[in-house]
Amino acid sequence: MQNDFSKGSIPRTIIRLAIPLIIAQLVNALYSIVDRIYIGHMPNVGQMALTGIGLCFPITMSITAFTYLIGNGGAPLSAILRGKKDMDGAEEVLGNSVTMLILLGTVIPLLCYALRQPILYLFGASDATYPYADAYIRIYLCGSLPVMLTMGLNPFINAQGFARQGMITVSIGAVLNLVLDPIFIFTLHMGIAGAAVATVISQTVSCVWVLSFLLGKRTQLHIRRKNLRLKAPVVKKITGLGTSGFIMAITESMTSAAFTSNAQLFGGDIYVTAVTVAASIGQMSFLVANGFAQGAQPVTSFNYGAKAYARVRECYRFLLIACFACTCIIWLLLQLFMPQIISIFNSDPELIAIGTPMLRIYFLCSFGSGLRCASQNSFIALDEPRKATFFALFRKVILLIPLIFILPRVGYGIVGIFAADPIADIVSAVSCTAVFLATTYRKLKQKELEQLAYPMNSEMHGSI
Image (tube, rainbow, N blue to C red):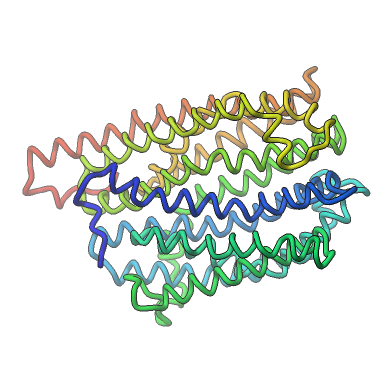
């Protein structure tokens, strides 16, 4: 049964969609988090192995970036077309997305596999940590295609309102990964390579579930052979709308590489491990706000396509409050319990002593990320990819990466590397929210007033 997001309570609808997505993202995060927890507690080599898997993060995040390019572009576009009652157009977007994911899932991993050694050393690997990083990434890259199909197509399930089915997608794989990890790592004595094998098997099972659902009877949008042929206008629209998500992910890869390489230069392997732990905690701390943003996205896009501008504005107001409240609560917990949180990944007293003050600095302004999350995702939902792309670049490329290189070289040393993140967080959060309120939100209000004044001409209104 079709989910008509133009009716009913906005907060209840968003919460109904967001809760399964939050659970799904929490479970999805367990893929990498559980790997790092198990690996960090390997006897004798836990710290070096944890550092090694952290060095792989820029590569795995680069692969994820291409799934965001397709999934985060195609899913809201299909939701907008559904709001316009154009089901054929929505299915054409889905079919083209499948083809692009298959092509990218073949080419990108091959390039990364061929260049893995120089890339890992560039990202801060040492002779001691490279063998661990190489053992993981070789296997992961061989199974990247099902990973990309799963992550790229699941947003199409969520965008139709099937949030529970989307949650099942990641839950199947994550639970399986949780079970397989200790078997391959410890029982079969495969070490860090076992974590990669468990991840690939788990994601392959999730991929089978996604494809079976989108080829089945319950879905509203179906994968059809006639829509698999790429069409330039469709590809351009998908990639244009997905560029923001792509840049957010690819710059996350660049940021991670900048952090690990500079941490190696100014502090050594122990600080690279601290950066790895910081990235893991950051991944978990942001997912609740991001779950709300992903839950609001199809509701916002559908109502925008249906020209229900008052409901679009209500979506944004609720999302802004929800995301900011979530990140404030997480920020407080991180500041209070940082030593205990670090010990989940590795109980080395030296790592806890070094990591606690550094990670408190790193997350000093993380509460502001909720504001940026709400505004940036609303830009995407409202088909404003240029603004979303700019603020994705602004935080990481314009602010964060230069600060990572500059601050330690102007007298702040290793502390400057960790201080770069809170500066970029607060500046980008305030500026992104201010621009959304001053431009997009204001125009939505104007269109709402025009509809009230000229209700018979509302169908003449164009896009923002």
